[in-house]
Structures are given as C-alpha cells and as structure tokens.
Length: 252
Image (cartoon, rainbow, N blue to C red; front, side, top):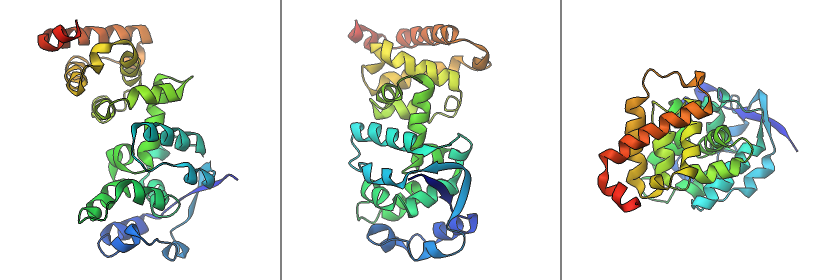
C-alpha cells in the first residue's frame, strides 16, 4: 500500500548527527522507534510516496548484482521523486534511521570502532555528494536516475553498465564536472557498452575521464544532440589512447 514518504525536521537531523557516539548501540542492534514518536520525525512529503513493503526486498550483501537490484527496487518503489527532492538530506536520513535501518545497518556497519564514522557517512546525507554518493538509500536512487538518463527504455541495462566496475560510478557520477551534466553522462554510459577499451582495467576509465574533463570546458552539452556528444567523447578517447600506448597495445 502506497503512503507518503516522510522526512525529519532539520533540528532532528542536527541532533542525531551530534549524538552518533551516544546512539551507537541503537545503530548497531537497537533502533529509533521510541524517538520516532516525537515531533519532527514524520513530516509527510507532498510530492513523493512509496510502498514500505519494498524494504524487505533489499539485499545488504553489497555484491554488484545486489547493487543493481537494490537500485531498481528503490527507483521503482519511490513514486514522485525528483532530483531536487533527492538532494534532501532530511528524506534519506529518515529512511536510514527508521524504515530502512535494518538494511543500512547490515549493509554498512561491521561492529568495529569505525562504525561511528560509517554512520556519519551512510546514514546521513550532507551536501550534494552525501545524498548522491554516500547515503545507504540515496545512492541507490541516484544510481537508477543516472541509468535512466542513459537507457530510458531499459534502466536495468543502464545500471549494469554503470555498476559493472565500482570505478565506473566513481569516475562518472562523482566527478564534480560531470555528475550533473546529463547529456554528457548519458553519452559516457552509452560508450561503456560500445568501447571495450574502457573495460580493460580500472585505470582506463580514470584516464578517459581526465581527457573528458580537460576537453569539455565551455561546451554547452545541453544544446547538442546525442550524435554530437558521442563524437566529442570519441575524440576524447582518441587522445586518451594516444597518451596510453601500453594500454592501447594491449587492447589491440
């Protein structure tokens, strides 16, 4: 049954962020159900809704297949989401402290002295990168959002391209110059399926993205069609291969 997504009030987020050490047992084995009855824990969104039953479908194993499946589950299960709302820490912090706490705990905590820092990174969502790259649930939505831009008719295929190597996501989405340039990201994800050189090793995508960032300044990608973007990226790859003759030789 669909119901509105809920957000935390900002003072609640701030209080939780300041009391991670004091609450570490709640994160590891307990929960926040008692606190969630207080004011500021359940502000209903007017835009987005979801079916809480999807929580039971999430796989905390951390495997590449699990990341793809989890991203699809969150993408399909959160209706009415927008990129603007997906930058809202209060939404992702609520999910990680209440509805999705068991998943976030199993996925990211290991009972070590690093747990406090892992909570700060994966249960909160400070800033653009925190929502997009770090939060246990937010990163899943952003995975599928980017995949949907590149492969609108087959989001799962887009996810499999984007998440085939951990370094793909890091280099494509998390780079400040490309993360929110949608036409450019779409072109790069298309290229992942067409250019075997990029799959040679983890360093290949790093070298390619260096040239993409170096040679893409001043280009208004939003004014270009897909063919023009693809040609630009092909030229960037030519420069990369020229700089890396050893890798080029191996591919040949």
